Length: 203
Image (cartoon, rainbow, N blue to C red; front, side):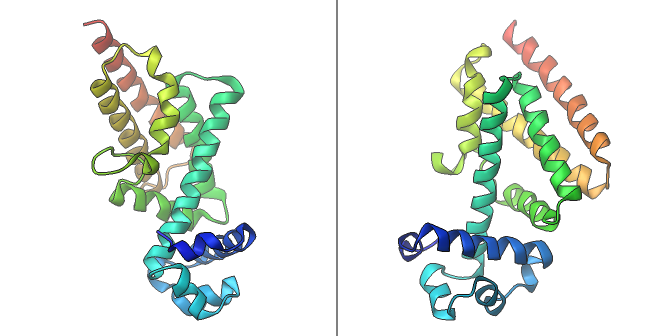
């Protein structure tokens, strides 16, 4: 993640740098982005880039983290607005994700974001990660009291659910499914999980 120097610059400048990364990774594959492109887009000296980040991968992780935080905010808003059921809340988030991945100008960046969190387990797997890297779990704990599960069962249930979410997203993108087809696929998979969790609760 960024060096301490990055956090000492004004918030407006941080936002500008992240925005530059979002624009670049929306137009170019990760492998085709270099430091020269970043400093030109962000309008900062090359030396400043290395004062803020170790390398391009460190910069990319910072951009990814920003996207993750935005999605967490989306999830919190969904829950606060109408307090939908556990699965319906995730379906609503998925609809936003898949729509942005197909229609947004940032679809390349968003698709790469999901591929990255799958390979890095960023935000989903509880193994070897600290709480700050798993905000989605903290938000979904809102629903914990509705399920008659032990703490370990709840952790396993969340991991299984989020892995289902991620794998469905990737299948939708890889198979070029429409938005409706993608949502229907997730709904059908969630129905299986829902039947399973109900069985577990009462046996």
